[in-house]
Image 1 (tube, rainbow, N blue to C red):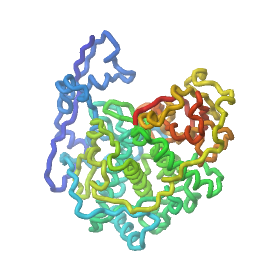
Image 2 (cartoon, one colour; image 1 turned 45 degrees about the vertical axis):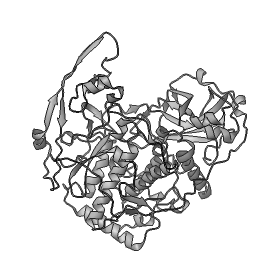
Image 3 (tube, helix red, strand yellow; image 1 turned 30 degrees about the horizontal axis):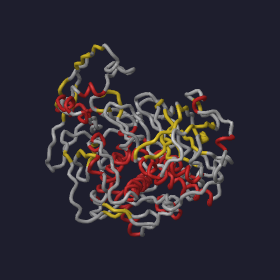
Image 4 (tube, rainbow, N blue to C red; image 1 turned 60 degrees about the horizontal axis):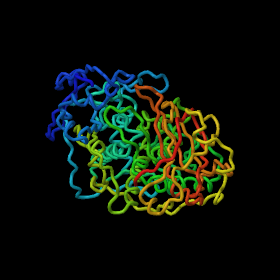
Length: 578
C-alpha cells in the first residue's frame, strides 16, 4: 500500500480569443500574471509501485493525480484510459537557455520566444484556396523571386517580432535542445524528435512558417518548396539555394555536396560509390522506410511519448533514416557541431531545412495515401491531444493540437504531384534461399552477452518464434526484428545498419533485400543524461519472402557500425498486429 500527496506550481493559462496583436513582455513580468495552483508530493511505500525514480521523481501516473486543472482524479480512477498524459504546450515564461553541444553549457544566445499573456486555441480556417507546395527543382523564376522576397521581408522584421527569421529558427532550437520543461515535470525536457510527435510537430511548424511568408507578400496560395530528394531528378541541392546573393543562401553547408548526388545512407563521410549505386541505394532506402518496414504505425511514426516520459523512446523509419541522412549530409563539417543543418539547435537557420522538412512532411502524406481511404492513424488520446504553441502570421500566440494536423488538405495545402520511383522498387536479393544462417557459426542471441558494444561488425543468430506462417497470419501480424536499449550519446552523430542473411557482406550495397534498415540520429543536447536507450523495429515479413527463408528456424543478423559509439541491450523477434 502507498499514499501520495503532491505540491508544486503548475501554470494555468487562460484562453483569450481576442484577435488583436499581443503586447510582448519578458520573463519577469509575465511570471507575475501567471495563475498557479500547488501540488506537493510525499509518498510512503510498502511496494515499489510509487517509488521515486533515480531522478527523485514519482511515477507519472501518481503525479498526474494532483494536476486537477489538467486531469481529474475521478476520471483517472473510473476510466483506465483517462490515465492519459498527452504532452502539453510549454510554459513560455519558464523557457530557459538551450544547451550547447560544444561546451555542455548555455548557448551564447537564447532560443526563447517573446512572451505574452494571451494564448488562443487555434481553429483551422476553412480553406478557400489551397496553398501549393512545388517541387524545389521544378519551380519557376517568378516563384524563386517571390520566395526570396518573402524571406527578405521575414529577415527584416524587428528582432523581437516572433515572425522574424531568427525567431522562427529558434523554435526548433527551443523544442529540441532543452529550453522547455514538460509542464509539471521540472528539468524533464520536451523533445519532439525520436517519438510519435516528430511528424505532427514539424507539420505545424512549417504550417505557420509558410503562412507568415505568404502573409508578408500578400499571397494566400504561397507554399514552401519541397526538396524532392526521394526522386533521382531531385537528389541534389535545389539550385536556387546555391545562389550566394539570395536570401535563402546559407554559407554553412558542406561545400563538397553543393552539386553532388545526396546519399540517403550517409555515414558522415563520402562512400566512394558510383552515382548509379548511390541512386540505387537511395531508392531502396525509401522503399524500406515507406513500405517494407512500416506495416505497423509506430514503426513509421515513432514510439509513444507521454508527459513524464524521458526523451527518445524510439524514432520511426523516416526520421532515423533519410531525414537524419539529409541533415548530416548538408551540415558543414568546418563547423564545431555540423552547423547549420547538421544539428538540431542550428538547423532552422538554413532555409534548406524548411524544404527538407517539407519533403519529410510529404512522406507522412504519401504513407497515409498508400494505405487507401481509411489509413490507420493513431487513435491514442495521448497522441491526439498532445499540443504545442506557435506564433501565427498575425503574431498571435496560438495553441494547436496534434489531432488537427492529420490531414494536410484540411490544413489548406497540397503538394505538386511528381513521380515516385521508389514505390515499385522492391529490391532483389543478392543470394536467393541463402543458407548462411545455418552455416555461419555465429553465436545465438541467447549466447551473446548484452549490453554489446558495436565496435566492429557483429553477427548474431536470432531465433524465430514462428515460421512457415500462412498468408492469413501475415495479414494480421508483422514479424519484426527488435533491437532494444540502443545506448548512444545524443551529442554525437551515431549510425549503424542492419543486414539479414547477408552472405557476401557487401555493406555498401543498400539496394538489395538483405539490407533491413538503419538507426541514426542528428546530434543534439538536452538537460538530462546524454545517454539514452531507444529501441527500433525492422519489418521482416516481406524481406524473408524475398530471401526465400520463411521456413528457417533462425536468421543471421549483421550489425554494421557506421558512426559514433553504440551499445545495444538486446535483439529478438516479435509479432505485432497490423
